Length: 367
Image 1: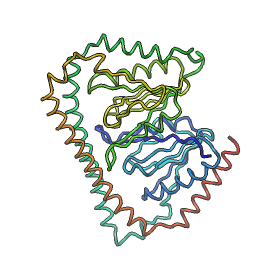
Image 2: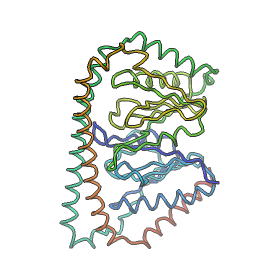
Image 3: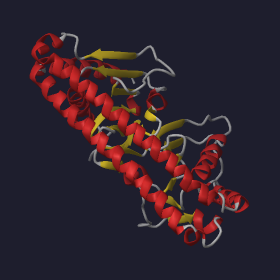
Image 4: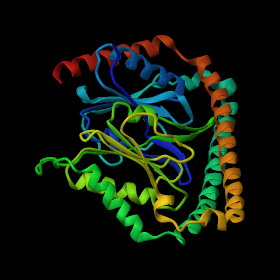
């Protein structure tokens, strides 16, 4: 039997540019191996090696997926062994908040393989520039999309009953925290992540994986601007104030908003269950909380139908553009990987894996 695997994104392509939440997940670990090197594929292969190896030991694992290619991975955390191995190259920000003495950078390019790229050096430079430009265009599209989304929100905010929204929050918080609170001497451990990301193939999320095994799931429904994120922020604050460990999942489009709060000690998740991560109840313990039905003046959808349709069309157009530019960036990244593949040294990679295995075995024997 394999270990319980939790999958999520720690960095995302958002309306605020590339947004990193790595430090929140790495900060308390004793040993972090940060992989540095030109080839993303090489780093992913090394991480996959350790996922397969440690999966045999039945340790719970956290696998961090790559937003630029969601089938690929860029990090592995095993908290029982207090260690992680991650791709630490740009645009990720790792170690900004806290650097532990046991954090170690592994340079996969230490043999200076660029010496073997002389014939293709201009092509490499050109592809890197194209990749950077494609990402900038994607972020610009998402930024424009967020401005359109603000127009969408304004319609519902103007027709929302905030007293009713407060009552919904109080009622749900009362339900979620009806069990005895955690001991007062326990500090809350807060982890910030993304449950989904904008990717070259469109939005991808891990809602089913993250909520697997939880006894209760609350699906927050509603339109843009109906207080879903505000509700989640109140729930997260309550969990933190009561000393519970809490997983806070930020919105992959606007990282200032929240998409999900999970408190495993109490066995529940509350999440924004609207597009692009729309889910419906499928099991016992699933419950819908519809903010539109509960807090917005009846008939708002109908009264503003034409305006909403116009806004939605403009919003979808920007999302489509963003996806197009992310796909363009991936195409250039794949071409770059082909060039790096020509000078990759499998024996050197295997030596690096052996060295890391030795370090991890020694580390785990003392954990």
